[in-house]
Image (cartoon, rainbow, N blue to C red; front, side, top):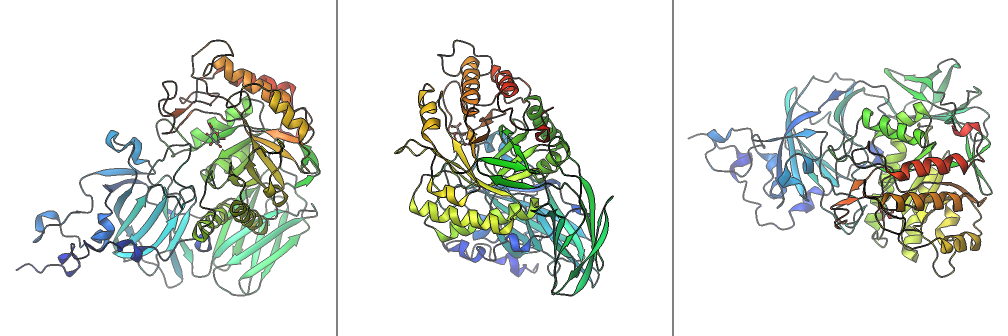
Length: 602
Ligand code: GCU
């Protein structure tokens, strides 16, 4: 009698336990477990993984991760899962665009593959990094549940040193893009609910004591360079920092933490002069390196100051969305995106509505584009729910930890179009304070709504932000521009305002008078009026029209939209420019001209 593997003998024993998910909610994988990866080699796990959809969460109910490796032909009793050997899905990828039947799928899915890992030395540790997985992701290695991550756009790490076997290991990721009322974002949003492992999956091998975090930036008073180092162990050591062309210095580390201000005075980074320095940090057996720009940010009255000069943001919003690849982006896609921003005469981009791929900020550093990056605290979040706040706060800290050393990012956005209630105020004030505490070198913002009672740009949250974002759609959702002028005249904000969204849908190739909705002429007219009218107010420090490219949105179901939001000034092919593109470029050429050469006006 073939010995039945005990692990798979009773795959159905848990079948009717409805509280099956309770066993897989802790530990959560959070910002605390992140490690610095800049300049580190890694083992890539990208490519084809075994894959199955799992709408009934059978994988957790039957503990598919617990199965042995018996091939289906050797089974003595039947099972419902054979490690997904019969089909694959690409990593990184979105399942929605892989198979037509999976286009609208929302739920759990299982990625599985074998991973060969070289044995670790006594002084080595291994970390698995997932660049981004939609919604929730659970990690199982050799049948052991290692943790749950919430958040579809930030990286997460789990140490696998103790769980990895020499030779082949079975790695399984359960990815769940179900929309949830208590999630961040919650279950209603205006973009496509893609599912999958959107970014690379890798293994990092580091010394037993390694540099877990390294932050370097120009001091806020411009008087030198601030460095902070955090080791993985509470040890005393010396961290040697080298900045190409500026020399090197030692940062004393006590109890695993070190801070130092060096007197180095680097050339300032700006869109007009995107100067980057190669930086390295070495401590014990570990060494990391990065390319970093040094710049200074501040707010003075209604002005945003970059390197002590007033800045005007000629921006555009952009989703991380592609007709062919969904949420998966790459260097070519990102360079095309920023080339379009430059072609507009723009100097900024709002990465809506969630953290984009880390490569976006790296390329923006290199070519001189200013970025607003945000977490998806979008619309009617469950503001009364403490675990929702913890989720939002963690995604914020993960975003900051990942991109802290990117000069191009000047604004952390903590929310978008959230109705002003007491619960929302408390929730988002906490996020604004968290961002400022975690990163005093950047400005905080949220895309707020008009106060309809007073018809002014004002929001109780504003006093907790450095900059007020305002989403308004006069000319589209509200016909005419008289009320825009009324609003602008009526308002007396005490800090800079950015028009964080405005625009209009246009079907590429649909023409007709500006009086007709969805025509290219109407979109061009809205953009021209918006830039001309808003640029005339000294408290408006810039504008981010909505948006660069058409993008998928399941909630857009008119004959003109067919599952797409058509407010792009370029069609979804990311090539065909609508009349709105030229209109915005011309408007930028004549308006918003207060900024100096530092702002990258070519
Ligand atoms: C809102 C929202 C966007 C949305 C846009 C629109 O302002 O912030 O996410 O896509 O309006 O209506 O197109």
